[in-house]
Length: 171
Image 1 (cartoon, rainbow, N blue to C red):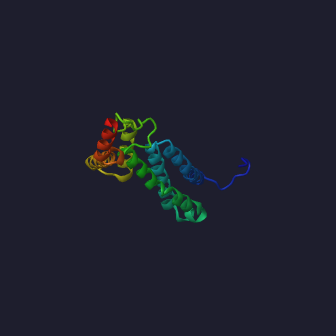
Image 2: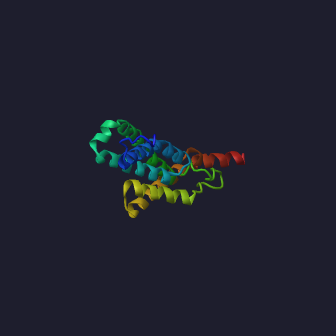
Image 3: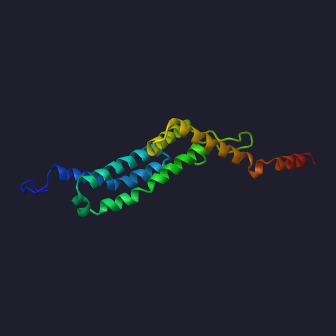
């Protein structure tokens, strides 16, 4: 902007431009956080983007008509809600995609979950879904129960295979 030439840009126009810029940068920030398994940061950016979208939508109807990119960008951000939640549920359930989790071996039937990541995933679910702590812990225990049952009833852990392997080792 040429300082000698006064344009019709006031503070509210600059604020709208800054909000649109933040909305444009949000998907990349969310993807980066999700790729790093940092669902809490992803949720915070998602909620901030939702706040910006709501502010731009209700600020003035003219803003959305002048900048149709606002609605298109929000449409690209909205699916992250499900992506973030499903990542949290997977992490809380079995933790199979957590970096630093122990891999399966014969002596240890259960993976060691990274406690900090699980707690952050739980905080993310509370932020996004707004559920109570009791409901969250019930969901967590249900997911862990399902994960344990899958491991117990997996083909390589069945009683039939154990008996067969014992017989083969004796013979």
